[in-house]
Length: 208
Image (cartoon, rainbow, N blue to C red; front, side, top):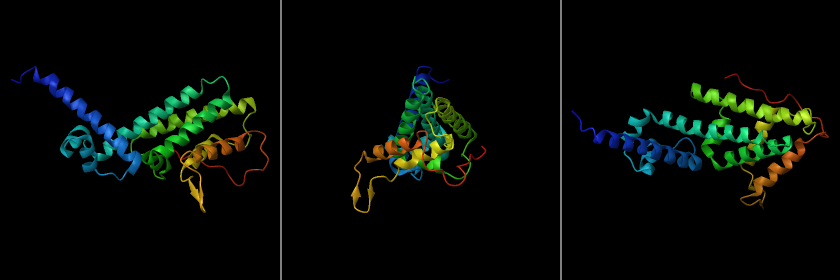
């Protein structure tokens, strides 16, 4: 019969290892993207690679858990932005936050840009929730007349990626915070009434 005193300690160790793996994976994909190896994650977490597989089964399951957490944070951000008294301020803050998330986390940027379906049913659900939140933020501003009528929530999602690769061009150095200027200029271009008709059909949403 196992020593009952050792059971809570074992569970605490297992939980601590799980948190270490989550934190290490989050840091790894932020700087290196989704191709980080299971061995590198385990080393950064200070555990053996066997612990990673015992806790999560596969590296892909661990990555999925981390990305789900990132999506949940974005959903929380969107909900907070919907509480702004000024609808435009709420939308602008969310776009800036999403742009920053894309810029600061290479793995997140890779996931949101993926052409194929989300790797799990849970991530597909989170994607729809986040899409709906952005649609609500966009609808709020449309209702005030503050957003040009031909801009859709899908345009907003695409525009959030403008922060990527926005530091250097033809000898011009924007600096580490130059992307904020890019997003601010872009946001002003979204304001009503707009001047130049948008070319071609707008971005489309893939079914989940």
